[in-house]
Image 1 (tube, helix red, strand yellow):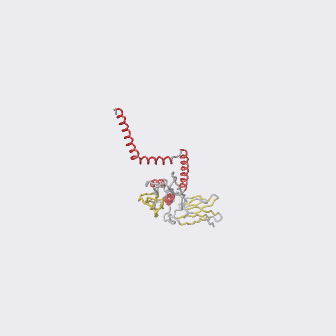
Image 2 (tube, one colour):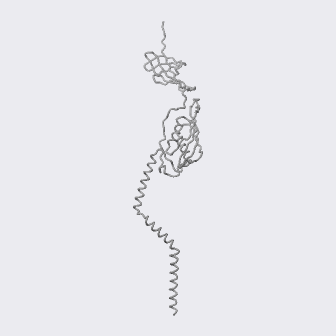
Image 3 (spheres, one colour):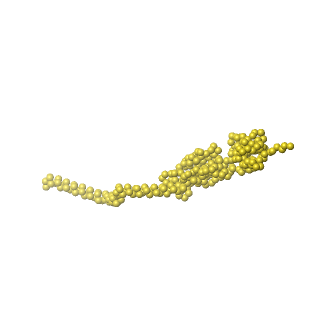
Length: 293
């Protein structure tokens, strides 16, 4: 056998060896990996969607999301997701911005707790102010879109005097407020919109019906006590107070602590109604005629 034939047989043998080793590596060592990749490819091919079909599904999901947001937004209260503990401080600041200087509110963060599947922050609010402004604060907390609840409340009387020593009948308060939130976004819409938190004035239940303090006559109005009816004319009545000052007053006009309610021309008299610290008093003045001999 010549050298050329031996070289050709050697190359053929080497090629067969490479094929055998490659086959063993592919089918034995890589067979499992190839099988897994083939199954993955079949799964991807089975889940492959047409772009137009994907777009149509996206639009449907977008519409459904908007409907759910609309339902959540129409609810009176929502429970937001992962609420910051600082947000309530900003909420209170926004409420008290337009309050008078008579009202003060202090906010203190207490703790974070869990109530079943929800969480809540506890805050302590203390201060004092006018009855209507304290009511507005409580109303805003209770009616806010993001769920807030006054858990405990204590009210009391508070009296201060202004620079003119006129008493101001205020209300002191101490309350615990709970702010609820959730760990997911199922209970609140994507866009937040606050409820209407405005409220009109209400009757001050803490204002005393009878008071020892009577406001001073700083407007120099007619003081009816001890006054005399001088004359009646079509335009009203001439009345002189104890200091000799003369006033022309008519029905409905304000006097010190009250109003002129009636001018009786037939009986030559005038009637007043006065509020003396919560005590209502009616005063009548009659025209005194001089008797001549």
